[in-house]
Image (cartoon, rainbow, N blue to C red; front, side, top):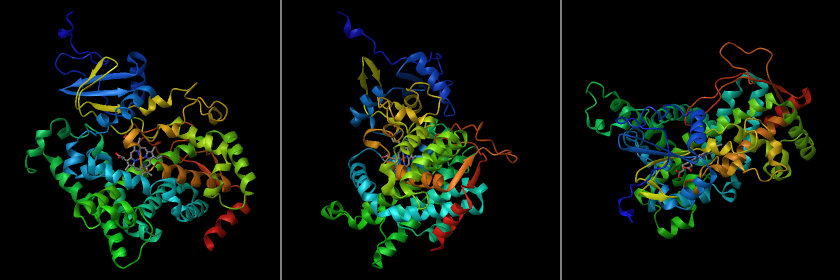
Length: 489
Ligand code: HEM
């Protein structure tokens, strides 16, 4: 036979321009409509190339499982981006860390610290933060977006660094916000020209057009400070013999693994833990915040769902005390609501991109080395009946509907380590919100704010609703008093 001359077959994709390849097909925004159109046209795998770079979009549960789970060894790398990874120094953060032995050690300990067991010790502080949140809505309900973000930020800082709420508010959150903004801008591949043309990084920063280098230097300083300051806070406390439970103190002092390997004072280990911790804020705040905002929107739009969830909660708690972690297993309808919220609008629609290490043949098709792999979580979320309908019922009777918690957090060895924390805190905040407040569509929206009934979503790596208004009122005078009393003592 002539099999020796067979040319490799690449997965299907949009037709390529003779010179530019798919340059103009590669979306500049996270465009889920286009991704879905490709899925309809080309199927589970969609392949694009431009300038010797290749991109593979994965559109089905099977494709994701086959490549990211079963062939994890080859598909757990991240793309290397010059701006974020090199110039900003973010290559040291967990989300961009090179997939190697050092990463795996760090990952293992991180997963222990953020496991349901490891997180139990933060239940009280999370509830305290939720109470402050509820109280803030009593005082100024129109501030709900800022207050949501604040509650999530406080939680991440409390769990990562053991930082008390007051200190977090005064010293750290503003800093962290600025840093997150800078990081976000730099992490969408193609956001900066230097990521397409990496040799540009060798230009001196005074060179015309090399503004990105100045930006890089500015970003690097900003990020280092943001990462170092709270880390030093924990180390100082540890040196004074004060140990607030936290992710960092777990990794620096508590873990048996660390003691066994005698790496506590290893400079490199300190550096790794510092950057792993530093990345939690930008990875955890945006995503959790966006999810809670989607919850507000869907509750305003679906008063019947809201009422039913509330009735379920009241039946368990009596409706006068805050919902706690222990109540969670007794609230199946509320759990279905949260699943459907996360499915209905996937806040990380394209997942975090991966990269293939070596070339690989899958179902007879060639995936070259260094291909950027996009696990299209949005596509997975649409594999249900009538995907645009918001319907928590689909998780109650029909257990054939895939559980969103098994895909919205990513896959395999790089799956989101913060998933249990996110799930738990979002449950606590939303269940308590329903216990004490009614959420509805406002009669009129202030200038510049959309209504929950027609709000649109940003087409960014983490996708949020555009600014919107919501009508949020205590269920009764009595509920308002209960909230006030909760924070008084
Ligand atoms: C609703 C909330 C959240 C969603 C939807 C979410 C989603 C994701 C996704 C899709 C990934 C990519 C995983 C992959 O490559 O397959 C990821 C990674 C990551 N997430 Fe989350 N996340 C959330 C909350 C959090 C929180 C609260 C934290 C921290 C406390 C966190 C920390 C991280 C980190 C460090 C990574 C990088 C993991 C690695 O590359 O090893 N996330 N997340």
